Amino acid sequence: MSFNTQRNKKPAWRRIALSAAVVAVTLGASACGHLHLIAGGAERPAAAEFGLGPRPSAAQLYTATLLPRQPLRLRQLETVPVRIADASGRPVAGVAIAVSGGMPEHGHGLPTQPRVTRALADGVYEIEGVRFSMGGWWQLTLAIESPAGADSVTFNLSL
Ligand SMILES: [Cu+2]
Image (cartoon, rainbow, N blue to C red; front, side):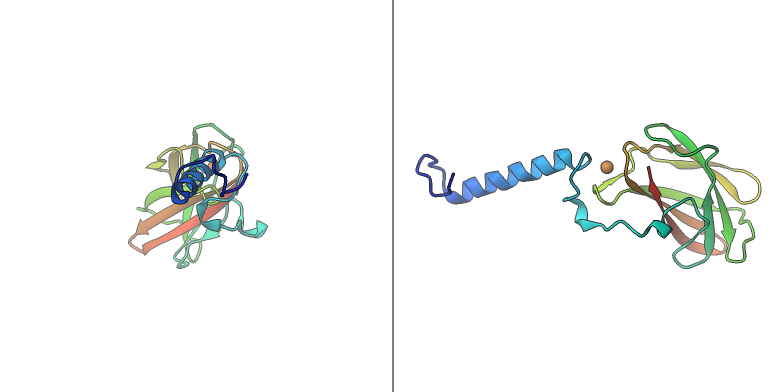
């Protein structure tokens, strides 16, 4: 088939626009299955950047460690404790944490809105409502606020 075919009477720009729309819809529909073409070309970090921590926050104000009671699973609602320490390793009390994240390769966010629901002892806070809806590279970002300052830490998780 050629763009010059006389059978299609639509103007060329309409055919091109239609093709582009079809391609966009096709990619969107399969982005979370197989293709990694959408989503701003995020590159998966090195293996050393993955894991539960301890992980330093961006400005090094905090160190965060995820402490799931069992290995994180796919498609389960989970409660994930996180320990927040200061730069010298002391637990930080009175922390407010906002949770965000998603799959950078797929361009979508978290399927749920996890929230910190309570503080345990020793700088440990429980994040409720975490759910990883498909296998792959996930990021979980914690925006951390305490009298020590505001900072954020991003975990890379492979599920
Ligand atoms: Cu995805």
